[in-house]
Image 1 (spheres, rainbow, N blue to C red):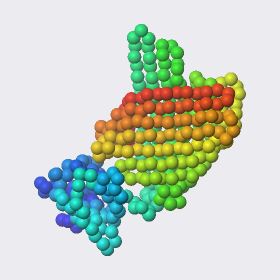
Image 2 (cartoon, helix red, strand yellow; image 1 turned 60 degrees about the vertical axis):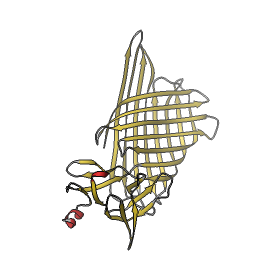
Image 3 (cartoon, one colour; image 1 turned 90 degrees about the horizontal axis):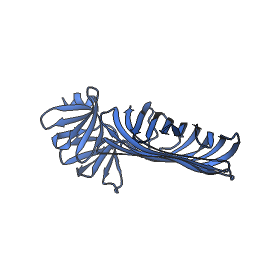
Image 4 (cartoon, rainbow, N blue to C red; image 1 turned 120 degrees about the vertical axis):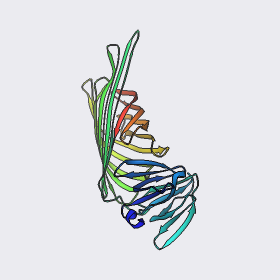
Length: 328
């Protein structure tokens, strides 16, 4: 029986005698998340588990501020200790409330060769009618595809808000990134962005850039990366003027899951200025929370801030959003 379950991947043996097989995505002090072919992602409380095993590389953290350990597999486990296997060596450690185990490609591995695609589509709306009428609508989505040493990302968003009959915000943005990894952390990025605004002084903004990036970390629960870009940017103003200039900017991308993977905090953005006096500030930033109702459905709230200060005109948009999202 043990051999047959192991062939299917990671295994969990419950105290009531039942067994689960699949891919264990996360182990923390209170629960285990296992992805199965027959029931999706299942959360199992630790006090219901007799033993579990993981047959892929893992990363182990015993507290936020401790150094991570890496192992090739976890061959045995009980309700108080686990055995880590690394090569021909093994090590037994105790399970604590602060212990976290996540799948990892290891500190010296490059991006996995398997194609991995994930993304989200979020929609939100607000309507209030009293002495005046206010409306706000938003739609945004993103798709990330990883294969071998390459990572592709596409983002798009549309925002519109009205007060009575006056439209105060109405614009859309698109962005495409392509990263080529040379080490597990260092990559080089190519970037293209476009924004069209129907209200502000800046009518359209187009840029193409390239530069180095650093993946500080990335695992099942969180990720942080920074990218420095040198871009060619063109701005068209509503009064008919335009400008072309070189732009330097820094991008960030961070997310962190809490309570297993039910709650996610995320922030992405870019801040920069031109190398001449054309653009003093070019800022685009988003921060938000997403609560997963199911594996694919979530409730989201976010704040998006867009601001450009230039010699010929300015653009400023702030949008609050609450709505539902579809994740894959």
